[in-house]
View (cartoon, rainbow, N blue to C red):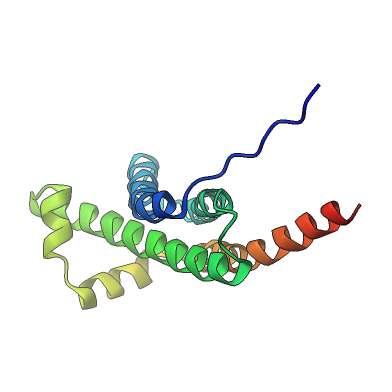
Length: 150
């Protein structure tokens, strides 16, 4: 039986998909948080895995580039999801829709409410997601090199 060929995505397609994946996952995290009435910060780790999977489909990206892009995309997911969750809660109390509230929330107000809404466990999940997105490209390259040396 022949070996399955790996999937390769052109670099330009990854650049187009990265913002879609990042903002789409932030929207999914927001939905999960609003439906569960919790911050759902564990979603940050799944978001990091999602971004790493997308960037792993581009073999021409080296590990340092993938690590930086994955970490930045994960940070954007965390920031956008927290912003949307906070704005949705504030907007609901003021009679505004989520999209309207997202545009009206100020940075200082959001920072204060994020400090109140996020517990230390949420910080651990977010730090774990950022560490995973920064280190996984290096580890996957080492594993790939070790397997190809056999």
